[in-house]
Image (cartoon, rainbow, N blue to C red):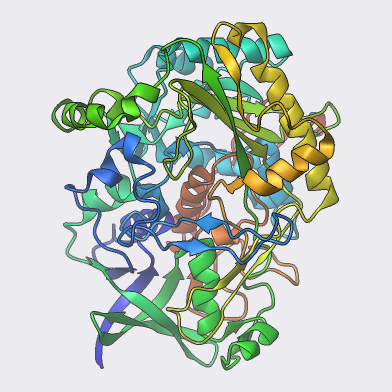
Length: 566
């Protein structure tokens, strides 16, 4: 087998991997290798770059790992499809392009974990500001810049735009939330997450802004940076308690790549899988799969969390939805307008607005998220029988139910066993009943009455608590936000050191991706992954973390106001 020597190997060219590749290769004396199992994010592949084509990569043999869960015991034994990006840029190349930081209290919760005080909201905010660049020329941008400049970044590598919300349905939706008693937030990523507003989207000038486009492609010319695609990592190489490289295959050829540091950025499913096939994990799991235990670490693959969501769909009485754009005879023009001018329906992800609210007054902070969409469609592209429709994606944000990722064998090509245990918690089931009733209350307000032509899904026959739970169990889908399977912290169940991102008990091996989240955040997960990777870059370069922000935010506990524990 051939051998190649580098200073740093980054396993996975997804969101975190692209951020780290950019930062770590800035020093030309440091040789950095990025190994990606998928292919290049070709400029010719409109499925990646056209925002409106976001459903097309799902299920693709060339762009998607095509995972599915084991039969979920509380979802009537259904297997839930779990799309994950298998291409340069990872899931940032195939996701819905919604940028949501999470609620400040999410990170304050992280900070309550043992020796995790430096992960509070004040500590992570400077990294959010560093990574982002809001370039939107839209009407909302002026309001944003005037009212929350201290919370937002303008010079970061990740460009994003604010949803234009041009359809009259968006105005009606915002008015409906106000009629329900909820407030409008100027910016759910700013001073106040609670409320409803246009969403930030990781797209620029009508094109998806993936991590590869934002961080990797601008530095691909660096002579000390090597990016290799089509590299399936079979094993992390260990010499005792020190990682010294990886073994990868490409077109049937096996190569050992050697380095002082191996950084695993393969995501919440592939990272624990790779650690486990390499002999790092819970001895019971490894032995059952026929893998020699090289480093016992019970938390690997545990603590799996995800957001479950449903589509509440409505027929629309007026021709103001995006539904006609889905007709096959309209698609050539949509494609042409996007290709030539980066304009038209193809230039938007159409998830342009939504928000966060409490399903009951007893909730400490917003626990439910809504995405509003001016058409009715599922992630797989399937449509209801309606000429015009609109919908909300809705679901609780902090489920108590947790699952796991366990390997089946020593062969990394064997997809792991993925069990989420959705709805296994009584608290989750209660929260779902609250969530659906609250969603219906919003969608039944008089502001939407001029457009309301009947509830398509779940339908008016679903009314009782048990009927709601049965429908959720029968119809809910993953929001594609897996995390937590290699949690950081210093407790017994922790896998990753929260200061230097090293795997506990091992030298030369680090993990940086959504797998290290102690708990899931309130919103889509792409933004927190960027933030974590930016912090990890400083730690791996031996830099001090950025100074925490001395700033007040909505819902901040009184004892924290104007006081920062650095």
